[in-house]
Image (spheres, rainbow, N blue to C red):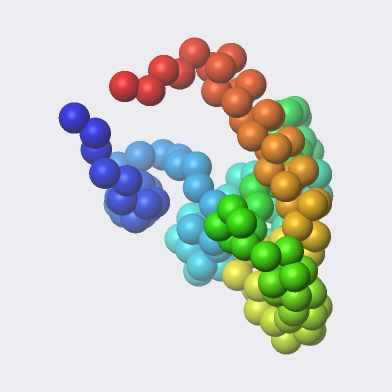
Length: 144
């Protein structure tokens, strides 16, 4: 029987209640607890520190190699969406994330803001999938 995904809330409750010593999640899951002093982030993925938390080292700085890649968010459209629409939407998105107030708010939420063209996003997704497929295969994990 598959267990439905409930996000990081159960893990966070267990950490805050001292039921477990550590957990792994996105910066967005932990940032407010870090700022409030309720949890301590020991490291972040990526090749550089997060702008919202410059005091938290990367795992690479801590001596854990192979985690230099950062997770990413993207916007996808259904196959067959007209290229003109995709290009127009992409240009509008680029302008929005370049606005200082939007950029500052996203960084404050713990995101690394970087615009990618549709082609760059496709290449990024393929590279990310390749890296994590290898990591999962090497771990011996087998889905039920």
